[in-house]
Length: 77
Image 1 (tube, rainbow, N blue to C red):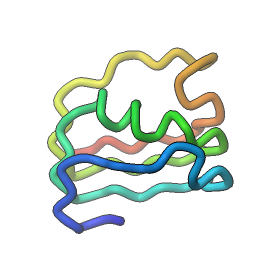
Image 2: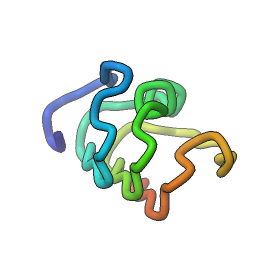
Image 3: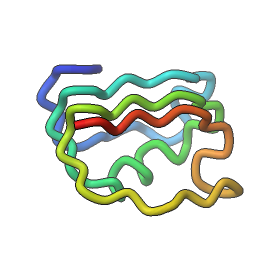
């Protein structure tokens, strides 16, 4: 889903349950809150690539609730 000009995500709840890697690089996503809310229903997500977006702030994650399996988060501009 990289390089598609996405500004936000709309992922239906309980979909993509087995997804482990999501590449959203080089889009126009600017809100961490939107990402967190949209991806919260993907329990096995291990790698999230967000480089090249317009995200200006990412709060420290709570490992117990937000992305419990996340091992890699790329945020380079």
